[in-house]
Amino acid sequence: MGDARMRDFPGAVVRLESEADVLQDPEDQTAHARYAVEGLLAFCDEFCEPVSMDLSLAYHERDFDYPMSDPVPPRPFHLLRAASVPPGVEVRPAWAGAKAAVVDELSVDTVTDFVARALDQDVPGGGSLGWYESAFRATRVRLPEPLGTRGFVELQAESDAVRYPVERRGDGLWVSGPGPAGVLNAPIELRMTKESGLLVFEASVYWSLWAEDGPGRSFVKDGVERMRGLGWTAADEG
Figure 1 (cartoon, rainbow, N blue to C red):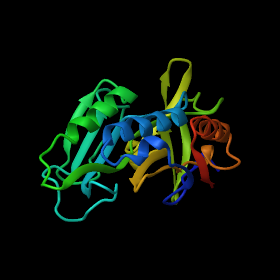
Figure 2 (figure 1 turned 90 degrees about the vertical axis):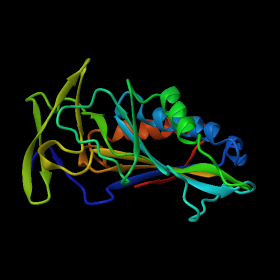
Figure 3 (figure 1 turned 60 degrees about the vertical axis):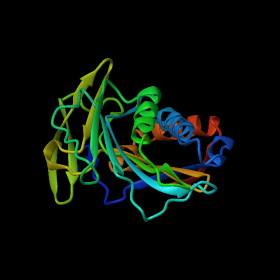
Figure 4 (figure 1 turned 180 degrees about the horizontal axis):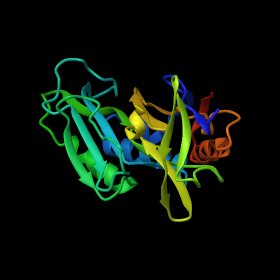
């Protein structure tokens, strides 16, 4: 049976929402970004570490935080990545032509600064530029004890069982993705979408270890509670 099983797309999805006051001003896009990443990193605390972030921008009317399909900004797509990437992990942009930047780590400050720089573009008269999706597709995730002590975990991916590499960091053992052993998704992938004052956070749990009844599920539940403590509402904990 192996140690873990890979779930089909989109995995077991955990979804939380927020309509915080900071989101009601469509002009303050940098504040939106800071609020979003504070919530996301609260979920991740001590068990999940994003190592890349894809960002999508679009114009919107000044009165509404709603994306317009036309015209398209000169630089709509951006990629932020950590300088140190786990062994074997592939960081590829979600969208072709993304402008890339590298930081020591993805933190509240580095992500907020990155979004502010991405938004620094010429805007046609009467319009405004905003961000509408951020995807964290490359991540490290802490294994529940005592898994990984052999230097690998046995992962059932589709019809094959693979020996998935484990990384020791501090007092814990971690797995990362995508890339190692030919697996196309990270163990957990994160996403933020924003439209008309509503911010939606999604965690797609691809490994059974952190899905319902998995030995690492308490990590996910604790992350949800941390976000609730910041005012987020749980919409789905599948």
